[in-house]
Image (cartoon, rainbow, N blue to C red; front, top):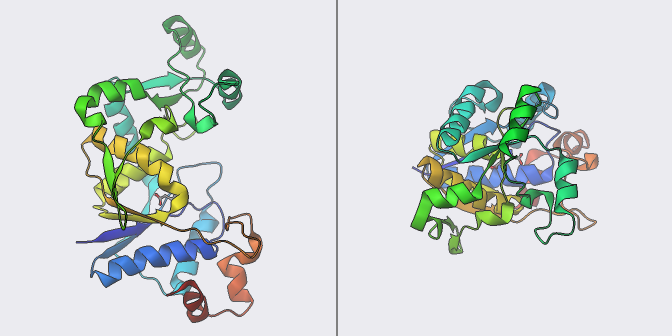
Length: 275
Ligand code: GLU
């Protein structure tokens, strides 16, 4: 059965872009007689706020969306994500990273691998790691691409996913570097929580914005390492505002709350978005 989901993070009010994304995933499920799930991705303790979660539910209901089963709230499942980290660590896939963002950016310097996301700082030397651990310094867990590649052998080259409308796409997880799978502050990170939940909830179609296209490459690797199925993906276009920039939570003028306050009806918004 086709199962799709909308998985917002409660870090702000929803805007038109979210409405488009939610409607796209919802319609795919409803047209196929499938299931549509709502998941609140609230593992970031500094940015997520309960009042934004309440606002998300209100905005979606106003839009006329309905979802199947209870809402899954990721902050209530941290032990499940910790078990994934433990399993990967037990297989030697992870290494501790005590570095700060600044250390890593300094370390990258002029190296060709570019942005922060592509960082591959590598494990600390054993002695240094021992000392940092003894000091009780906080650390993140990073996925070692080298160890993952070793573990998968021939399957590394075959990593791929189906993008609806485009066909089979080879996954290139290496472009993201040794991604953080457990943040210092949260004990888990987006890629772990999202892949765990997509697998657990039987999500067959991940329909989300094209800003997450690169993330999919990493997620396909995690699925292979964990033995989870890879869903079909559809990365939809991002809506842009009048100024040609894509909507973001910082653009307060286009939140659904404000559109509603300004008298826009859900029918009008849906029509405007093509639904
Ligand atoms: N929680 C993520 C976000 O708000 C989306 C996750 C996903 O769709 O995979 O951007």
